[in-house]
Length: 225
Image (cartoon, rainbow, N blue to C red; front, side):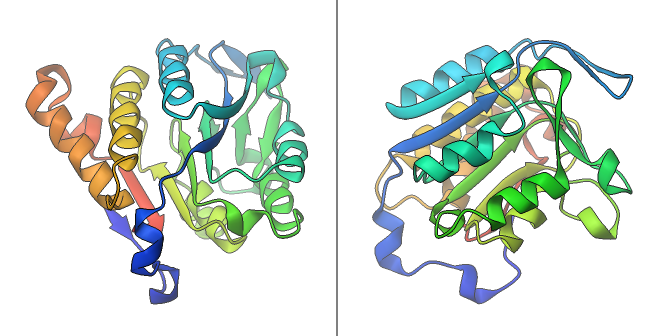
């Protein structure tokens, strides 16, 4: 599913043929404990990370202990990345302190810090064409975080955000994400088409994950072309 809060967020036809070739990849494969809350290790996170790295030869990655709360802002201040892909657990609660992305060393990147980071990188946030977070409950929350990461990203100028509407299986997500990005490498393919094709492929070629519970939670918000 794709949605946009404003027609101004859609791109002209000339932009649809631009193939993203550079990505910033942040990931957590290990188990973690944040504020006494335990998060399991994501068994398929490593395969997802490796697939994204292969698709984007021009990439920089910070995994596990290298993925610190301030890594995101520092790297965006140094380079422009059309694609930012984050593989981890996330929680979106009713107050800012309970709304965060889990990073390495049992730390967290709060929604306030995420918003501040994207807002304070001069001329860089709107250069991010796609910010994707493959994690649990990434689009849940109250009025302040109605669309979780997606809402924060769009407010700061990121063109498109991809998030999940409910908890997702990391094994099926790894397959879907790889197909999504491979589809996106084809000239003229919009983000919405790339996601749709990946979902259809999962239905037809992955019987184990054919149920909508595996492929339907992911949504694109913002500029879906």
